[in-house]
Length: 217
Image (tube, rainbow, N blue to C red; front, top):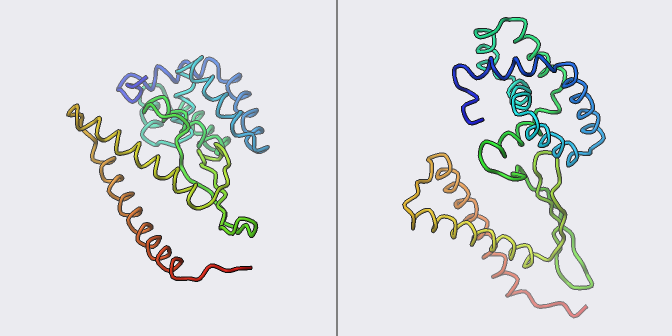
């Protein structure tokens, strides 16, 4: 539903939602309970199922939960104020569901899968192997995709592999004369600068470690 923002589209999808509003609200109440219980993966899967089974209802809820004033205004213009107010109530009643609906909407519209929105990590030291340890988890919204623990070199191997995948992807785009949009290009430049800063710090740390005598303890 790439043209969901088209001039005629909001009214059409909202009418489909209004016909099934009672059942949809019951579903949203259930999803909110699962969210409170921390069952984020189950919530994500059920939101995907809704997108697959009833696209109109899914997009109506997704746009409503973003609290988009433009969307509500379009609904008022094409239907009426009452319909728009019923959708505004979704945003007020189910704010915890905004994130999973927005992520699934991104998956559907932009060909993503479990987009990583943050990474949590903790550091420790393992005396048995004489090495720091890093425990990390990529997060997609509130959903933890996986947890891994390894030495700094093992973590950097993952980072190196992902960097190589990034440059391979850009090679494909350039070899085929595909464009890269301005927003993505700007973000890539920012990430490169962040990497260069961290690599400079890593270089200094490694130089210092090489000069430090290894403990015999």
